[in-house]
Every structure is written in C-alpha cells, then in structure tokens.
Amino acid sequence: MKRKAFFACALIAALCLGKEVAFAAPSPTAEDTGILAATVEVEEGTGTISELPLELLTEANHEARLLVAKIISSAQTKAEHQYAEDGTLILTDESVPLGTSAEPELLAAFDFVPSESVKEQIEKKGKAEITFEVEGVLAGDCIKVLHFVNGEWEVIEPSSVKDGKVTASFTSFSPIVFTKLTPEVADLDTASKGINFYVVVAITLLAIAAIAVVFAFGNKKKPVKAVKRK
Image (cartoon, rainbow, N blue to C red; front, side):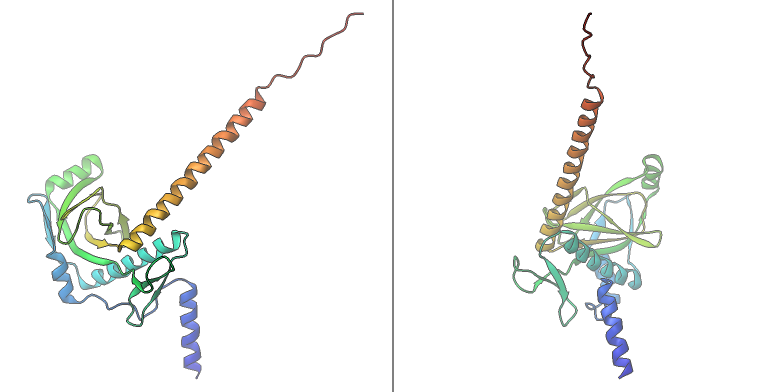
C-alpha cells in the first residue's frame, strides 16, 4: 500500500514539473541508428557521416518530444497534449481532430565529421553552412535540427528546406538529428513566433512613444511673465 502511495505521489510530482514519465513512446532500437544514418548524404569533400550511438539517438528522440511540448505550451492557444496508452504524444484540442498525433518524426540521425576545408571555414567565419540530402523531406516541411554540443542538445532553425535537401549553419559539428514536426504542431510553432513578434513590436512602439513624450515635455519652454512698467 505504501509503495502504491509513493508511486502515485511521484507520478503527480513528475506531471506538475512538466516532465515525461517512464512510459514514453517506444525508444529507438540499435537497428534504427543504422537506418537513420543511411537516410542522409552530404556533398563529397564536405565531411563524412557515421551512425550515432543508441544512447544519443534515444536522447534525441526524447529531446524532440520535449521540443513539441514546449511549442504547444508557448503557442498560447487552447492546444494541449497528452500521452496515449502506448505512450504516443497526441494533441487534445477543439481545433484539431481528437487524438491528432503530435509525435515528431526522426528523419535522420548521424555523426558528422567535417573536412579540413569546412573546419577552416569555421575558424575564419565562426560558422559553416552545409546542405544535407535527407530522404522524405519536402519543401515547406517544418524541420528542426538538433545538434549535440557541450553535453546538451541545441535546436537550429534551417536556413532552407527544399525537396530532399536541408541547409543549416553550424558553429561546430558532432551528433546531428533532423526531426519533422506534424502540420498541426508546425502551425502552433508559427503562431507562437507571430505572437512573440507582435509583442516585441508593441513594446518597441511603447518605448518610442514614451521617449517622445519625455523629450517633448523636457524641451517645453516655461512661459515668460510680462513685467509691467510703473
């Protein structure tokens, strides 16, 4: 009985903290590492591609799902998410069909070792833009690039997404993962960025108006009283 109570408390605490609990979607398998590495190519002379360790692929899968949850939360809409019995991430919202999948799709996962010319480019310019040929990518897809650096995953927005090609800028190279968001989540991501943009514009306009008011009152001359002659 005590064990059940402890487990229930732990589950509630995890949910309150916004963290995923143990019964998440099926983790990638060792076979997946080879398959995902085989779905991407790079121009000859740019670098070499190899498989990711299963541990990193599992972390990337987890990170992609956290990214989706963050997008849904920051979109400031009625959209909510939950986990189905099999652990799949789904949307629960009046604006989308009940049970619409929000699960991100891992398109490619690989370790990239840049060539000497690319390394020199990073040393000179601080970054290098690389185009990867990725199976399953179509122009207009919402692609997020996950890059493992300094023990953490960072999210890089591609500079270009075309049929079968994804271009992005990197300041360093190591494990890279391409993940595709569902159209519903992509729309929420766009809405979130739009909200943030208008908030910044509104704050900027208010700041300009405040400065103008201060300047106007600060430079307003005091009226000179006429001196009557006796």
